[in-house]
Image (cartoon, rainbow, N blue to C red; front, side):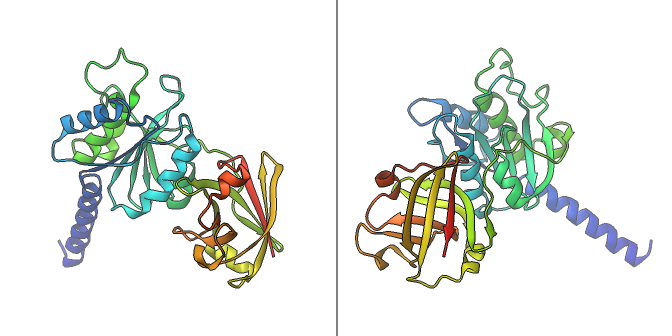
Length: 300
């Protein structure tokens, strides 16, 4: 065997080993709409620990509003890029639990894994990180023992169990189940676009502690308007196409650049265009919410 062939074989083996390690970094991150008032989250973590007590278990949040798949999708996109390759995310916002929606594991092109119902939860992360592959969970293999009579807690019986097995290296990604086409169920929303001198986007989420509005309009798109700090924007907000707010708002670098109680536009920690009141709640004052049916236009 020539030295070149040996080198190529070594590189192939190294790549395969590295890919396997990505599925074995022993980190599982949970998200749900369960809240922490009862034992549901603890039960999921107990199942994960039962697979391997070497796992490291963390949380995104368990305070997703009940049944709010859009917010689950947003919190994944907000969080996942900051975790190492190979991290397994278990996201359970599942109003269709027990129905025909698919239970899947998505591997992103960045090397993250998301275990979830394919009900729209994957809308944003599939767009931002890309789809490497998707597999449907084979419940004949990847389901907690003696749980088949339970139809309403797949978070514990299927998702936590499968995610833990994958993270611990008990199974490979290929052993999750059969491969699916590289598409996911998506939630329709206004993408961030620039049409002439008008930006359009979605009010993606609220900075809930403070009542700030975070859009999906990225900094690089906003900068094409060439608005200097102190320049003003004409901002119009809509719910299901109906105007609910319109105003002239200054663009500022930070909250203290405007008087207390006054509005500002700024780039948030994710470098997306956002709106706030200094020391106040923009959402509360103007009765604004967020989600795929809330949209915004911004003009010079």
